Image 1: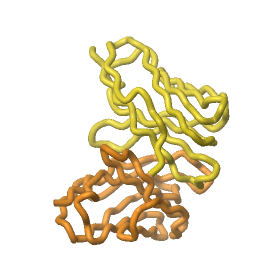
Image 2: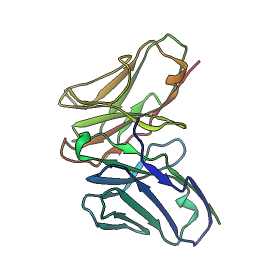
Image 3: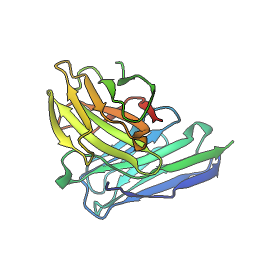
Length: 112
Length: 113
């Protein structure tokens, strides 16, 4: 099936560092969603973006809807051990009804 | 408000059998979507139900089917199981067909031997 290009695939950082990850698509999206998944659990919605250029924060997390509508970025500031998990981007494009298209995830490990 | 619940959490079946998974959406949510998650393919959309009707369908064979009940609870069924069907099956609910925000349950881990 169709997938988004999400990078990096994995990150290993020190506690307190900032983290950046991004997703790109070959087609235009009208919604971008960022999720976090921990072992044995389903993805948890972190941030939803609906408008090109939109910048939205949720605590230490900030996500942006790229102005080309083909990409999105997630930043985590001052990482802490509980940030560990897999972060997924997901998007919906206008021609795809409400089917979420997913990236393969960014696995984040934080060294205390 | 209780989240999305899925039962069972774990299931082991043998090839050729069939399986039914259950999902209860967040109270008040009327749309339920199903996804298959595997390490190699990531999350793949199976189908979406709203008001007991399938509204969207992914690219899965006809062995995968679902339904939704009048209380918005949903089930998905996989018949003639294959080894490749081993995956985490996730259910997500959203308020309606306008809201794009989907909230996931913990999933059902299906292992086919």
